[in-house]
Length: 335
Length: 219
Image (cartoon, rainbow over all chains, first blue to last red; front, side, top):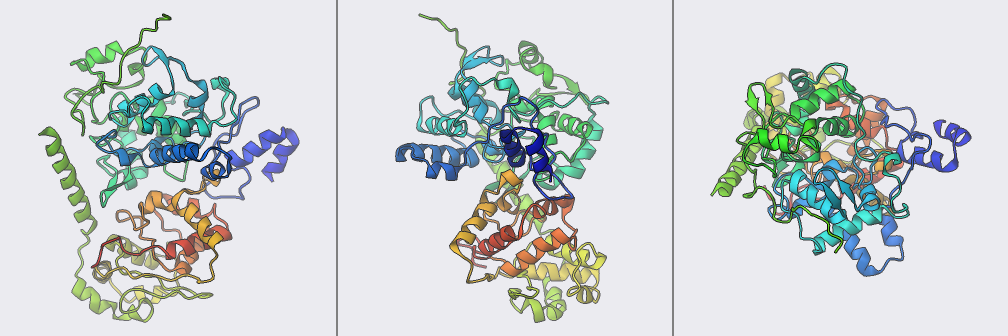
């Protein structure tokens, strides 16, 4: 058994983490999960579950708030047309209730923030980070700072981080974010990406990228178009989407595509139409230039692809505003 | 204005999606006649039968037509191994597959059965797997693909809620053993092979107890 080998060569904690998180203990499978195992010295955290919450001695009112946070996280569509203006749930990208390694687990945010964030050029706390998700990934209008929903969401994040030291080194966390894949051998290609998409993705996400809505409920999220994330979302960066796909898609069969396929299909998806970048200045090339170093050098926004200037003429999607009022710059004064 | 227009568009897209799901060209009337050979097992109402300890006959009433059509073709070509079904599908031609698929898809879903002796603990485990999954073992919740109420999604992911427990259990085991090999991209196989017998019993029992019809839906 793989697990017992781990027990011999590594520390106990390491072995437990390996069996819990990387499924090393599973019997022979035709379609193994194949996520990387923790490297020597990596910090491994197994977030608590909702059952653990019920068993905890937390105040009943705190349990209620965390439960609400969990519910919002896995069914963010309940905020549709109020805070969420596309077909995404938090859980769409932060899979497995935000607990899953290599699927953007959210507990690191609770212990690495407040921190300086290049995207907006100032120190952000957890609430402001979540404002970012709503603004871009949900193409929405974030819940107000200090609101019940914001309290619930931040409390759920913090619950998942239970036991992790504050300001634990963020670079050594096992499975954090979507670890960058090696640069592809061949430059990412639209045509090859279209083929990967047709063979592996369109079954659920549809040929037109719109996913599936059935009886008014989102089953499969839209990966482009009005119901998808906008041109400013973190996952519009090719390296982020390629890693998300590699480690999580097709659902239930992670790591089944090659790195090249993941880069190609990410390029294909992230060069389709989608809602406008909320920081749009009125000119896509200018907007690209303005946020180039901190963001858009990793996207195709404002570039010409297949004879089309990407982002030009993009609508605001299902919402009727560009940038939510809540998003603002900060000049920190220690006064 | 713009918003209203977009919502109309979204609604139109939705309708389109629903219509295209019924695009299979079959004649329900002809299907009813051809289905005369099906009723011995699947019953006149398409509700099938749960047979503890034996091979359960699935409830096929109200299943998606494209899905039903594909299953008949798959039995014929062997990617879905079913010695019970094979002699029957061999008596039918492709148009009859389509007719039968359309006929059964239009019947109201029939509530299936499970083992009355299933324990509370088993059902709780089944509900957890079906609705939250077990990500530590990478068992994705059924509802992610089979729809929020496990009432099916599109033409690929079949209706599970209210299906006979014996049938669901048989199929999960069939994926494990390789008898069933006809799921697109092996999305089901990958999950099934991570499940143990306890998981399979629990999830089958829980699903069989869920409403086979959407709330307020009476055909």
